[in-house]
Amino acid sequence: MEEKLNLTQEWDKVFPKSDKVNHSKITFHNRYGVTLAADLYTPKDAEGKLAAIAVCGPFGAVKEQASGLYAQTLAERGFLTIAFDPSFTGESGGWPRYVASPDINTEDFSAAVDYLSTHPGVDPERIGIIGICGWGGFALNAAAIDTRIKATVASTMYDMCRVTANGYFEAANNPDARHDLRRQLNAQRTEDYKSGSYALAGGVADPLPADAPQFVKDYYAYYKTPRGYHERSLNSNNGWNKTSALSLLNMPILAYAGEIRSAVLVIHGENAHSRYFGEDAFKKLQGANKELLIVPGASHTDLYDNMDKIPFDKMERFFNTYLK
Image (cartoon, rainbow, N blue to C red; front, top):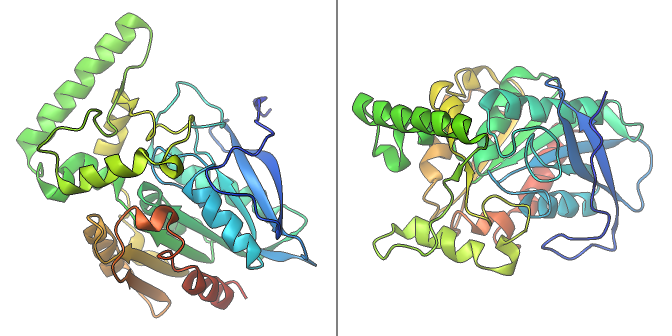
């Protein structure tokens, strides 16, 4: 039985509503019993059963931000799309809040495919997914297990397990550093149990330290803009559950990325600090239906919502090719 969610009905996205699509709020459930909230976008002139795309990300963000922008834009181009909040995040259900899990978050994509596969307006043989930032890694992980997914886009992707275990740019890729991280996270578990709550940590420090790396400064600047802020976004509110990183640390993803037989498009900005994640993931992929696109002059956050940089034309051609 699905959890009853209290969904916001007014338009509260960080982007304007399109007059070319119909929009509605929907829910569906995953196999962990969590009810997920999503925005459904359909072209106003839609006829028959459409190709469909499920979108999620970035990590810590909500469907009112980048994933919704991707979904609405691709609906304008003829696809039925949903942008969903992951388990424990945004308007989706599940407790405790703000937990991340490579297993549950991979399942979230398959649950979205469950919903789309049974939607009367969708051709179940023409379903694709898009993962943005940290959800790019989870999207590839989902494509490796769910053969119903015919085409996958990983946009400006992070491998959240790898960055948790090894640090940014592999700076903490050694047993001592991982042991110290495990010690800190487990000590926090004890404190959380004592207090009966779950402490938030992570995100971008505010105020920003003077010696912060450039990519952290870029994040900070982005989340201070109107398009980067949403009241339900953990990125905007600077934190996530400290203990949730344990599962990311202990369960690597992409082990079977080389066995993905469906089509994959990996997109990164030329100047994105995360580019090495996408390029390394692409090297694991096999087959002629795999593509790597480097967007000239684009940063990591440009591919969140910079309409001049996001290659929607390329994505449209990719999905039309492999969801035909």
